Image (cartoon, rainbow, N blue to C red; front, top):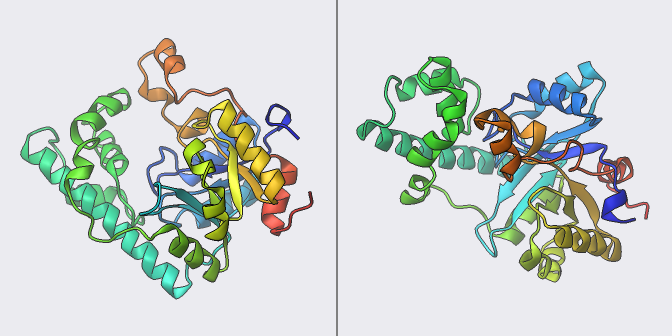
Length: 299
């Protein structure tokens, strides 16, 4: 197996309107199906509230799906870990997800209040943001933007400039009300909740820590992900094959499913952006997807 011969069947790293994605779970299913994918996982950041809608829509459209969420860890090396197949109602996991929703929403409100005080955000209140996003516990700048767009205050192609002005740097100004877990503790929680862990978009430095990842209980790596260089993809695949790890992957915020294509003012600007990727160039094969679903390596 080599990277160039991998034909994506499943897109297993996607974000929806339940975290910082642009599309609802139902919209993601339609877009991914039209692109040519046959299976999906919505791996929203530190939240799992999209799965019910995803599962129902996949059943309706004849698509397969896998339960997942992407977790940040506080140390080391800023790893991101995708947890698959865990029970979000497992008491400790449920509590952790609630804390992560509070962490993100608190930070977003503080950035929002700051932007309002400076006159950079007008015509909308925080209560209106909450009302527009009913049923979504984890709120970020995207949720504010969508509420403003729904009110006719702002246009889609204003997003990048609006984000840079009000949220990009400001998010780091406010200390979090809850911390992320360290790597080993996060993986342990995923496992105790009945799931397993995959390292998301591992860069060269992180791939150099493969022993740390394995010793922490990580069981797979993403390979076909738009943030990885060709060299990183090849090394990630080789490590999976050599060490008996699951092979995952997905388009994340890039590509057709990423939802940001409409934020660019021209096709030329879009194609120069790192968010543009060729269709069906991220994800994992049907064989690798089956291994993940069955939690059994057939290699």
